[in-house]
Length: 288
Image (cartoon, rainbow, N blue to C red; front, side, top):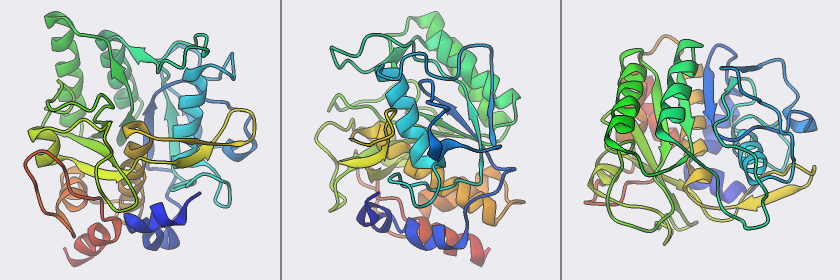
């Protein structure tokens, strides 16, 4: 892993304090995960829904994506991945189908499938949702189902962290506009937004930036893989929230969310969010 990326968002100090707690459950809505990877062996992995959770094709983009994101959060410390909170619990709910990876196209999901996945992980007691999904163009009725699912998560006190998207556009989506969602853009080692990160007013007002360039995590073939984009950035924010909640297990979701989005080096710009500052969030929680 790159310690410079961990230090950029001051996760290194928080990671020295905690490896996470098993009662902090992260719902990972992504691709299937290579469950046989030696750095993902844990009794704290469980499943939501009825779809396949382990990869049937380790070379598929969906499998590589899910394994990569899982590694950032949940790999063993000392692995090539950031391994932010290995002692938390991981609740897997794959939504990306495994297809041929030869064209390099990133996996996407229908809004109705995503909505169902959100409801399932919330009902299975997730406290945080990590969402790194590109959406197929939603029709009005499918947008409504997704809105209801996000409202359901908010009502249950579940914090949703969502990748802002990699189209390099200005604007928002039904996900990034939701007031309880924390949208995440990618940044370089100087904290500048990457060119492919989507930006917009709702992202700038409520979101955060995190490392999204040349991030190294677990590959499905046992070798490290380097990847970028907002999908890689989102789990840095998710992991920071998980460690904060591990240190302050009785805190409300609203208090945790406020600390991570408002503490430290916050200079809210019009369309680009501030950089995650995990240690400032911890200090803010300690003072209250």
